[in-house]
Image (tube, helix red, strand yellow):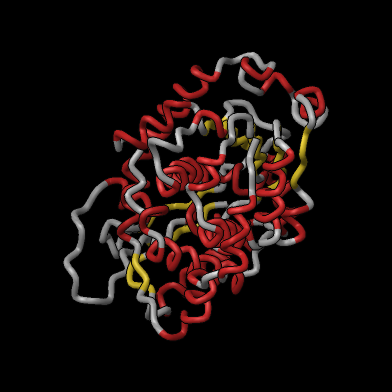
Length: 345
């Protein structure tokens, strides 16, 4: 079913409009207020069935929800500039199973968080030299093959140099890769699997983050990240590193806690994830370097789209104070002292 939608560059203040670009036009950020595009659902039949079963999505609900969400954006005086294209808005609608009020709330929080933490969520440039080095190290990679339809994001803590790079750069790499994936509609429906190899995790890694940072990252993941987090696997966890995980899990909701699995061995992981899709270094068929080359090609293709996200803007005022306070709230000395007792083997 085709839905005709308006592509709007929503701007209410007197600021100068950014230069037009193809990437912005594709996202509804090009200043072309009278142009239209056709949204065409290209999901495979199997994925459509899953969307109906799990998300209540059909052509009618999707069309009506997109219309309602665009109307809400247009009437929200605080939102000065926002993408209104189908793939972008469907991130939020599918994550919230087509509850339009909840999807709108998540979008508003997404815009606010991007401005509260620009060092984490803005200037998402894969060609920044230090960011490119972190990506090339193999710290974070997407697997070319899927896990039962789910895109897999694979991390290896030991490949991140905590003496050379910052926590903000680590988070930014995650932001670049997830933003690159989130417009893919199959990912929106099927969700994501995470595999985390914590071999090489040192106290230097832990020291990059304050407890407040960890709390805020988790809050962002839970409340403003339009992704369906389906499974989270951890490998090579030392007893002391488990203490760090336990601390982090205190901020997770029960649903996400229940989706975490700790594996004592690769064989244990293979019971949950087909080993063939893993890097060759973990028993799979394709080398990590080949996977990285594929990822870097994809990141380059999406680079301008990610940089154009910075054109979105929301005016934060008193009505947003509860959420802003929640994100910026300090944890207190009792929690701050927790990391001083941690020893990571």
